[in-house]
Image 1 (cartoon, helix red, strand yellow):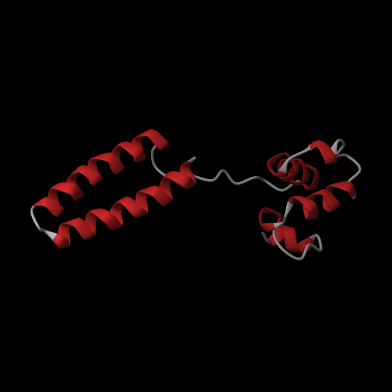
Image 2 (spheres, one colour; image 1 turned 120 degrees about the vertical axis):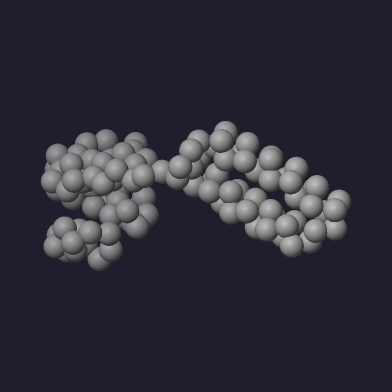
Length: 108
């Protein structure tokens, strides 16, 4: 991110919109076909042209299928807890399910 600010950019490349990235890419003569690129293509092209190393983001642990499998088991556990009138365990399961749903959106 420090390299982004050196080049006179107001905010980091990852936080820019596609429109802003296209404006930046049009100023760089090595990049062609800017209007046909999506955000990830634009980011990689701009970073390659400016010599910025891309950081490989670590995705959340597991795949979507694994996360959904965990959600299903927690739903079963939640129903059992509700049947046994154990509201504390049902609440814990509900919160874990909510967290896992958010995680599945990030992983996808």
